[in-house]
Amino acid sequence: MLLGLVGKPSVGKSTFFKAATLAEVDIALYPFTTIKANHGVGYVKVNCIDKEFGVQCNPNHGYCVNGARFVPVELMDVAGLVEGASEGKGLGNQFLDDLRKADVFMHIVDASGTTDIEGKPTEGHNPCEDILMLDKELDKWYYNIFMKAWKTFARKAELESKQQGGPSFANAVATQFSGLKVNEDQVKEVLLKLKLDGSPSNWKEDQIMQFASSLRKVTKPMIIAANKCDFPTAEENIKKLRKKFPDYLIYLCSADSELALRQAAKAGLIEYIPGEKDFKIIGDLNDSQKKGLDKIKKNVLDKYNGTGVQEILNASVFDLLGYLAIFPASANKLEDSKGNILPDCFLLPKGSTALDFAYFLHTDFGKNFIRAINARTKRALGKDYELQNCDALEIVCG
Image (cartoon, rainbow, N blue to C red):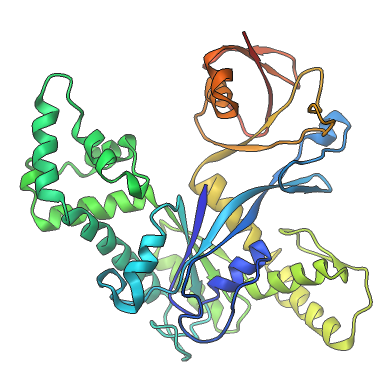
């Protein structure tokens, strides 16, 4: 799973990325600080099941603190996108190409209105314009990819779909544009929704744009991270965003605050669990550090119940993509061959079955599946059992 950070320059994308991953990246108040895409590991937060079983888990990947299990996900921070990016402005083609493999976009928006449409310092900018600009550029990006091969591809796909046993048009689209992580069900969903007239090979350009835009929204769903929410000018802008874009998930965040807390915790100055609304001082702080932490507590944690960064990561994976956290666990044994207790927690799409989970763990487990066992209830489950969030399952094979 890949979460892509997008937005215009100088809105705090790299700060958000560093706050989520603690990776070393360049952060500066000028456009195009980031040129090559940064990749790192962030974490989604789930309730660990170890306390239910009266044990302490030992994760193979990620970590667990006070019953909060942090499961790794990949993050990618691309350079800022500007108007005209889909036509190559500001190295836009290169940056957009980096986003092909992303499963979800996290659009980092400067809610303070202190950067203009190109990411340059200003005052009074309306961040609604940034969302409109990015939506337009992303739609054009998909449209341009489609137009390169559409007429020839669509005509061939139509002919093949009419042949006995030939692939459906939706299947052909998914295969042709698999580099964008398009699947057949998503194409069918869009075709059913749009009900475009005529055969695809005869669609007009505005119909192809409509199809490209709708497919982009389905294949690359987007969440809005209203960054710099603690700035005095942010409150009115956030109201504008919510009024203008009621269909988007909009979360408030202060990436600067999260980064400061994460770095203070790493330095042993405070105890802080990402996503929590408080911290505990455990080290010696100088006056400047005390004032900084007091400001974060008053202006961010107390006011917004957290910095919002962890909430956005979780919402992207669990709310927008609809993934589930699943623990492999035997009904009689919770540790692996190395003695690690509840070592794994995996993320699977909503609607996955016990058989899907078996194949996810290993192809042989799927091929030789007999049943699954609920580690909590010890009840046997068939291959069609639909997984629930935080299930603990054992796979029994023949």
